[in-house]
Length: 136
Image (cartoon, rainbow, N blue to C red):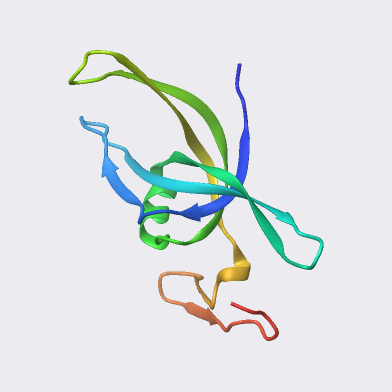
């Protein structure tokens, strides 16, 4: 039975890119994201209602792009499938478990960007200026 997760949060550390072992090596980007729970306070602001950390992986060319473009503190929207990872503790031999997310999509929160450079082709590059009236 599959499940879907969607959340918005901030990267706690810079993404880490690695490659699987073997002949058919595949890139995988590991991210640590804090998913917060801001709630309107009734005065135009927000109260922090807690949140949680989740280890996220993004595979393939999307993972390579995430590792290249995302940095600590970036606000992202993430969707994917939750799964429980299990392993044996090296010291105690006990079984350990952790909830993780395999991301299908990771998108930047546009309200926090100062500008975007879009590559149309290998020879053409268009730089889009910061929109007027948008606060960083």
